[in-house]
Amino acid sequence: MKNYLTESYHGAVPARAVGLRRGLAKLTLAAGVALATLGALPAHAAPADTMIKAVKFDDVKEVKKQLANGMDPNMADNQGIPLLVIAAREKSDKVVAALIENPKTDIEILDKAGENAMMMAALNGDIDIVKQLIAKDAEVNKKGWAPLHYAAANGNDDIVKLLLDHDAYIDAGSPNGTTPLMMAARGGHVSTVKLLLDSGADLNVKNQLGLTALDFAKQYKEPDVVEGLTARLQQMQKQTPQAPQ
Image (cartoon, rainbow, N blue to C red; front, top):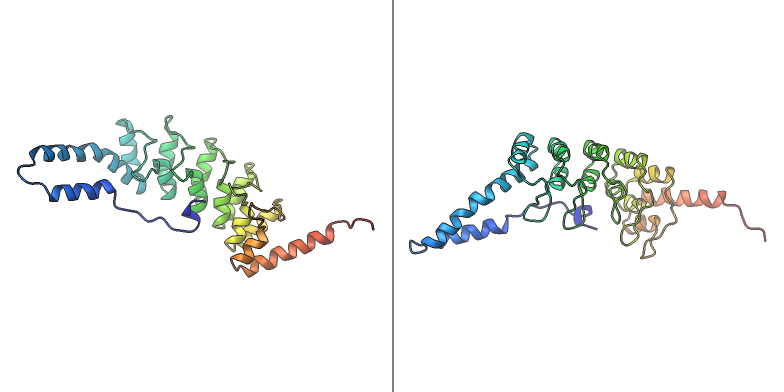
């Protein structure tokens, strides 16, 4: 899974900006042709840079202006992250609304790691964006890592419930078979674990490594979750009819 579950986002100076600064530092009077070429770059890049900045800061007025001037709502930054995913990551709710109202916007668009706007909003606990996307018929049951995994990973119970209310598959398996319940257990989110179990999550599911939610809780040293899951298992065993001898 993408490192959004274990690492925070760290911005980086765009490579092209570094290159431009180095190039300008080496210019001489004899490099007139190179100067003319480099001089054309900022004018070309400026609208895209302005748009990305506006998306990050929820400047919906500027975003609408750029869209009206023909900016592609599905463009990506120099790290391959589409505008809609950036907006969801940065909790730019007004910009998200403007982008998804544009008929050209692909609301399922993915970044290079396979993440979309609903996944970012679910991870960040931004239920308003999740609601906006659901209202536009965004896919709740994305194959592989799904929004429910991301909501459960950060213990965002309100979004977990919202997704389940819209038919999110509760035992959705990631590419290696990890379920939302396992992610909640891994993060030590007791209330999320309880919510998922009460909603029908299967405690006995194993991922491709043979690990259950209880194994995740033990591995990541979450004693409260271990205690709760162990109690659930014991309760299930008591309720299971014993086979006749």
